[in-house]
Image (cartoon, rainbow, N blue to C red):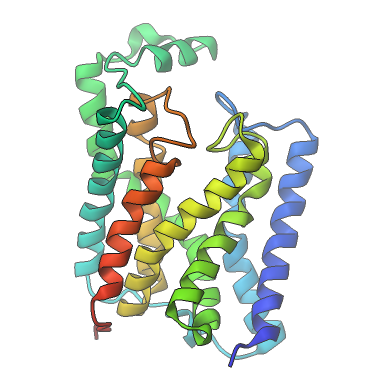
Amino acid sequence: MIDRKGMFSYLAITFVITYAIEGVLILAGFRMTDIPPLYGQLVIAGVMWVPALATVLTIKFVTREGFAITNFRIGSWRPYLKTALVIPAGFVVIYGLTWLIGLGQPDWQLAQFRELMASAGADVSEMPPSSVFLPALFLATLIITPFINSIFGFGEEFGWRGYLLPKLMPLGRARAYVLTGVIWGLWHAPIILVGFNYPGYPILGVIWMAGMTTALSLYMNELTLRHRSSILAGWMHGVFNSQGYGIWRLLFPDVNPLLGGLTGLVGIAVWLAPGLWEMRRRPAADA
């Protein structure tokens, strides 16, 4: 039976705080285009911890049920290594298909990125050649930035997969997974409306974002529940963000966000594949 009190309290706290903070930011003129102001980027990064805050407030003051439900544990190292390889491989497939079917061309010289940095006042003459910069950046997104991004990723995942997902599981695995993904996507709505991920497509962008997060949720939910670890969920989120906001958007700057790349139909289709594959396997929680 669903704990409606806990679930709705968590969602109310998460959405009210998030939408209030981002609403004030947007009313102050913040937009997610080109290079957003640093103060806004810091606020958005901080907002990633709102789901964790909502989880703590709900458990401590509403349900008083204890934190065992959140699976706040590390677990085995194997799924961390596995996802550190599978998620970047997914991005290789996504952008390989985007290129192959003609939805985007790689900017090997990073001309648009250099122009953007120059317009922001940076001295691009000091920037290393693309033949050095691109491999170095890709290597960093594999072995360095996931550890940084997973700190912020855990702020979300302690809520989404640590608290909300178990609360929805009485509905059945398929419904719980879809609802978690859709809710996760709609949580991003305010910044989608001002250019995040889908510039030029505010309304369709909200819908597409929910589709992308739902597709990705299949994979993340399955591994989180199987290994009983919301910390693993934070790690997967960090690996994903390291790739999503690392080399690929610099290399493919002109992809239609609704069709190709991470955010488009190609990305949604690719992320469904490992999620459905994992769902076919028998659940086996590790020790």
